[in-house]
Image (cartoon, rainbow, N blue to C red; front, side, top):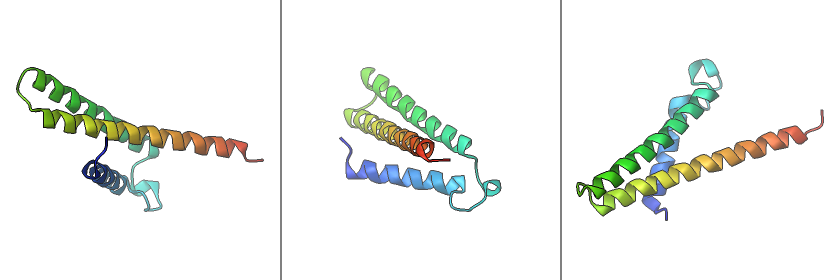
Length: 102
């Protein structure tokens, strides 16, 4: 279950990604392309999953505590949920565009 702290961290990460991508600057020359932004977002989710896996293995070996594992898994859950939500919105937008008359 997502806590307010995890949600705040997710929003902060999204704001950082958007700030670094040049969103709102009006020109792609000043920022990243959509493809590179998408690649960075997926890479971030994958990295979160790797950290979660590493914490789980460390706990199994007796080198990490349960709270670190739960936090890592929750962060990964939020990242994946965010990615799925964005994917769903992109698909919905594409479907709306395809329904428009020419």
